[in-house]
Length: 243
Image (tube, rainbow, N blue to C red; front, side):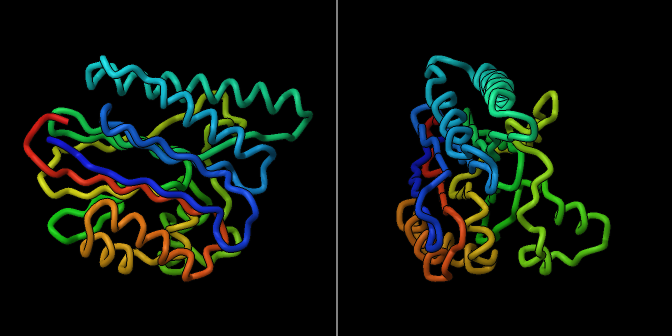
């Protein structure tokens, strides 16, 4: 099944530099968003290393080999970022969230660490297919915080997992499924999800194709004075040929 896609990124309305990076390789069936951890040192170094490492995955791999390579390369980046942080001194962290989409042979896999998100629109309904690795998500899961209160919580920026964090190993969660014609995936940094509610994202994705939707989602975030960097990747399954 063929896919078309568009990826856009912007520093947002309150920051003078962009620590987000994306990967868009429709020829591989591979897309990703990496968001340098806000408030940490050299977040842009972390996100750029993730993107450049994924960007060089060869096109000759099978779906299983692609999945293995993504995990191996993210693990290698995790170790490299921890080493970089150790040279900066005690307490330094060089880290990034990541969300990755792989589409092959009529199936998809989404892997992530942190609060960069993956969504799937199918049959006009938008569902989030990732679960944030964040403090507020843990509070929601524990019943201590309502879902609608999470985005505006004073500690909404605290993530509990990232590539380059102090953990010995980085764990990527994964969801998989069968691809259907017309499926639309959205990968984004939290600059989008914190500025634009799910209902508005769903309406924009439903109204336009991959190119117009990506630009419209970015515009919606900027209209709402997005406080963080904003990155949007929209991937649309368009036909019956192998992707």
